[in-house]
Image (cartoon, rainbow, N blue to C red; front, side, top):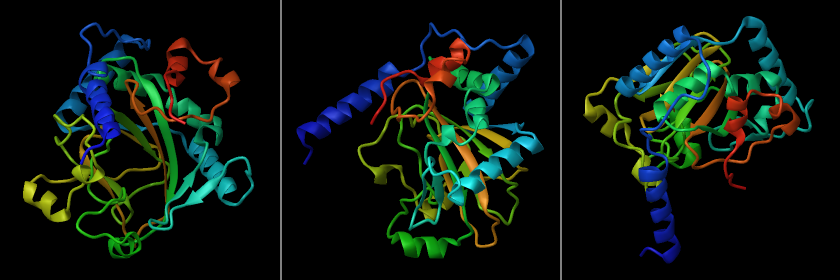
Length: 290
């Protein structure tokens, strides 16, 4: 039976997702771009609407990747005590807390004008940086993961088929290591984002079995690419992290953008944010959880 708090939560989610964050006819891009980049951003938006995702190519240089990997290694080796590192006992995934403090490049990518312009042109609202996730993923087959996670009817980890449950949202994800066919990769069902932007009442509504996915007849898109590859996708698509025991260790950084809902607290130096352009500073506004 639904409680009063359940009903209030459902009403709030419905109001936010159906009205307060829906595209506005008064939208005007706020991030300045050249006419050439603006045209490229509009083309990326059309691609996301059609196929759920846009591949933005390699966005980091070899030296930038080296710097980021070194920062991750230092944190893992307890050389950055101000940056806690946690390990998920079920999935083995290492997550780096306070990721915006990991290296200045993380903030640079988070506020990249071209990538953020794609996001705001797709959502057609002022956008906010809702969350940042930096993780290191070890090799593991699904049987082992299911044993650890005690998977039953449907899986509940990010390695099982699911939709995110944060309402209208885009993610920008960058591979920080090369991801080939033997490696653990991002995979999604194209077109499954359409019409699914209202947060469900419970987690199970956002989860899907392998058999269900196979029954759709939709061919999954397996995302491979060199280190530095960036992907932008509507997280209401059905997707997963496909784990493999043949994989090399995979590092990635993911940025979550929304029109204002589900904003997490971000550990970032206010002095640094104050030096950013106005359009970038606005990413850190909004009422945040925690």
